[in-house]
Amino acid sequence: MTIKSLVIIGAGPAGCAAAIAARMHGISATLIEGRTPDRRSPGETLHPGVEPILRQLGVWDAVAARGFHRHTGMWRVDLDGIRRFEPFGRDADGAWQGLQVDRGQFGRTLRDRAIDLGTTWIEMSELVRASRTNDGWTIESASGKHLTASIVMDATGRRAWFTSQLGLIPDRLPDPQRVQFGWSPADDDLHDQNPVFQMHADGWQWRAPIGRGRQAWVRLHRGNGTTGLDMTPRIFRPCAGPDWFLLGDAACLTTPAAGNGVLRALMSGIYAVHCVAAVRSESVSSQLAADVYGSWVSAFWESSVAGSVSTLI
Image (cartoon, rainbow, N blue to C red; front, side, top):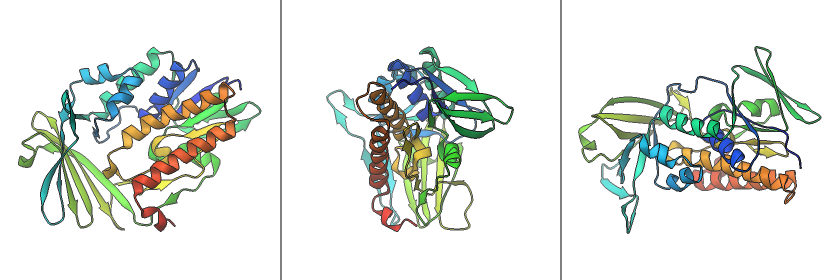
């Protein structure tokens, strides 16, 4: 199959990982940033398991050089007040360490790598339409800009912009979940520099040290009548077709407590491009590639939501 153009909408971790993977496969890629790339967003706590992925993408050294805060595990405080430490693990080289990254700096590192590899970067705000053509898709902005693509990947996160063009409706868990976040002086119980995950009757709170006596915090509330970002778990089925893929949170949104959002985003971008490369080499059909990718996303969703899938409405 001849792939004339791969267009990735959204330049977060999923979109940048897809662009980097595409260039490493020798596939031309265009990365569209539709909103301000350094918009305010909560920090991200990354499990040590992200390191091999970042090495594969060729960005680990640059990420490590940022000097992000490192930690060896987390404290968990249950509803009964019992507090216990859960380490990540260790090997012959010592204790494994996660990272508390600043999303702006982390995003710039990924974008710089994608551009260095030859990705075309386009700022195209207010996308209004995606329409099919004989050769794939045309993406149109409110300002009248047009971009053609043989394959489109949606990496717009919770917004999942492309799904509205496809007319897709997600499966959602029935219990609403909303998140608030911010930064504040570090609490005394962060003295050992490891994050704290504390359960509450209506949700949970995550606090993570970020250095210089500061902490990032995220508070999730379950139930109606709450405010904040809508983080109710949901999945789009299908999440891929012969000429389109949904990446990261655009494909499925799991609870932030799973702690795998960035890892899943990076992996989805890499895997979607792997599927495209297999189609290009005529190893599989485009529909089979889409089905395999969709099965992978569904398996991730079901394991992350952990038994709540049966309550979908």
